[in-house]
Length: 111
Image (cartoon, rainbow, N blue to C red; front, side, top):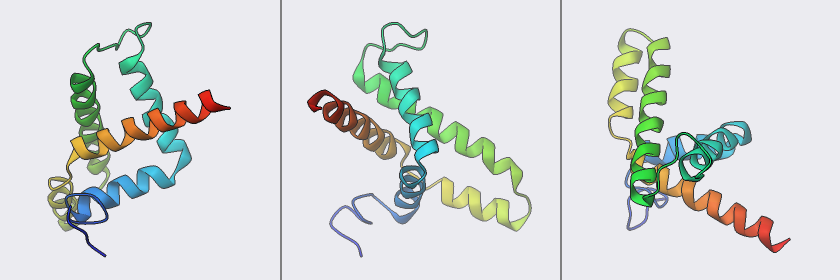
């Protein structure tokens, strides 16, 4: 089912499916949440003070790591995967992950 933003709240199917897989695997989700913590923690060597820069850096890392994993595929499948990944809006996924981390921190603080 689509909505006004495209596909289940995301711009397109490709962005939604990447986000869905990341959010449905707790180990993967925890990994990316720890990356966000590194980008937002003043104690971390990866610290970035500006929130927009954090989001952009996270989006770049998401894209880079997914493209690196694409190297495991070859032939027509690599071309199809590359075409799909080129449509992913990494900034949307980064924003979603940051919102998830913020919500989890708020829940922990409420307990």
